[in-house]
Length: 254
Image 1 (cartoon, helix red, strand yellow):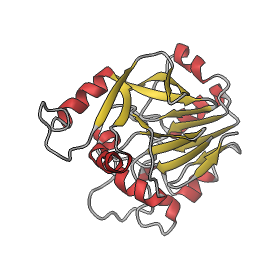
Image 2 (cartoon, helix red, strand yellow):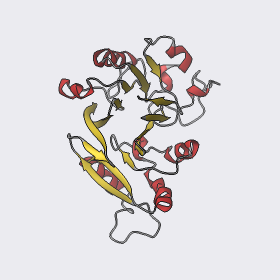
Image 3 (cartoon, one colour):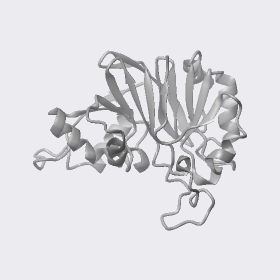
């Protein structure tokens, strides 16, 4: 299995105008972060987790020409805002894009992208095949995916486990029951927004505590705001098996 971090950043706390903070002014490419997303490749099947506003740029950067499905964690714009661009894959692959998410999230898509699901859609609009998921495992072209329910303040969000790889973003609470689904995972990815307390995201210390509980062989931090600090500085503070993920990082899960 190969995992590519397409984006490791967040819209949270990021200014829309020029910023003079050390991270935004950093010359280190590790500090240049697009909105969080990951691509999992296993047994010839390519699965994307989230398609935010940077989706098109991320696909072009990685040279992706084939995509089997998209798993959505939740409906916030920084995780679904790029879905209009699946039309390029529709054209090349000559099929709708399979989208998997909670029923609530799919309902949101039908509103936000109403032109896609209208009775008489305009020629050339994106084509999406929506697949509702619950709490039980499901398969994407033979690849088993286990949803893990987490909380983003009060909003239920889907984390995902595929074999020995688990991916959690936009969370600050996981029940003990759902944590059991993480037992034995070898590679854990978890969001770590910043150091200060936040209403809906794990802080750095909270993410590290979860990693200590789950005990993966290796863990990566994602959904990082510029408030956390520069990549090189944060990396020096982390335990030996914990790393700050960065855009374009590829990890082999054997």
